[in-house]
Length: 242
Image (cartoon, rainbow, N blue to C red; front, side, top):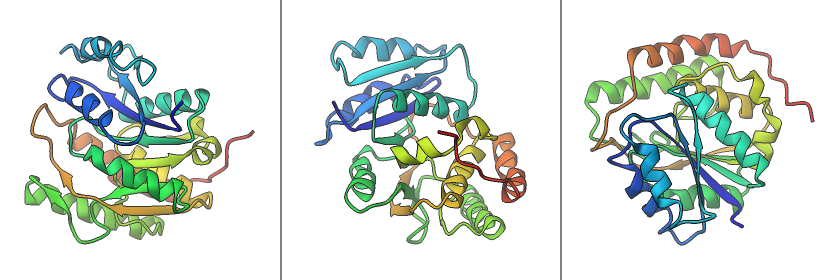
């Protein structure tokens, strides 16, 4: 059995899902893959099911009744990963904005170099974003600076969604107490891990905006992240009760 599970939430990703699955399974390391599928009307789930016989015992699907938010998708995936004994659990988008080749570098940062959480960072070495309009680049970059200022968290890419968690991080964080379900979820998970004393390491990546499918970003999601940071700063962090 592999020690590593990649979790990919999907909603209407028929253009990308098969290519992403095949790419992950072409890597030199034996990653397993869990697709958390939110009942996509475009048939994304059917494509996954059609590939499961080809990748038996490596490809899995967790199907939900509808679009329930990024945070709930990942938390469902985390619980599944812990129940099935994985030691390294990854978050990754389906649209190739995260390069699957970088999974190896995130894994090495935790498995070989001692990080408790490794973060695929767009901003740890300058600004490494391709195909985004300048306005969105600036919004994302300064949002991360804002989060650093408010929380004191020493992370350059606070909203990054490409990450590797060691098992002990997800066992320690009280997943029932996670408040945010949109992109603020990414900030909250990093902040909670940091406050609990875990070692967070940023691994520089190049982020390339999707070329197929439709972005899920919205002004509502951005506002949740922006205003939620203030309440997060005063949140009392307690580990899960073992």
